[in-house]
Length: 146
Image (tube, rainbow, N blue to C red; front, side):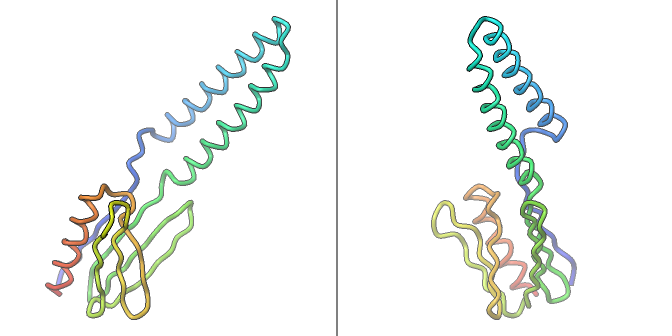
C-alpha cells in the first residue's frame, strides 16, 4: 500500500517579487499623474489618485493573501488526509478510506466533494472543470484499490 498525493494550487501569473513591482509601478504612475495635474492647477486629481492608490493597494492585498492557497490530498495507510490553506489559515480533515464517497462535480463550477462519516470536504476549486472530473476519477480509482 503506497502513498499517493495530489497538490492543487492556484495558477498565479506573477511571482511575489513581480507582484510588488507591478504594485509599486502602478502607485508611482498614479502619484506622478496626480502631482502633474496638481502643479497644472487641478488639485482634486491628486485626491482621486490617492483614492485610486488605496483601491489598488486593497486589491493587491486580497490577491496576495490568496495567492498561496492550495488543497493537498494524501492517501496512505487507510486514511485520506485533506489539507486546505485559505488566506494563511489551515484546515485539515482525515477521512477513513473505507467510508469515503467521492462526488464528481455536476455543474461547471462545482468542486469535488469528499464525504465520510459526517465529514465533508470540497476540493479542486482551482482546477478547470475537466481537471475536477479527472481528479474525481483518480480518487475513486485509488480508493477502490485500497
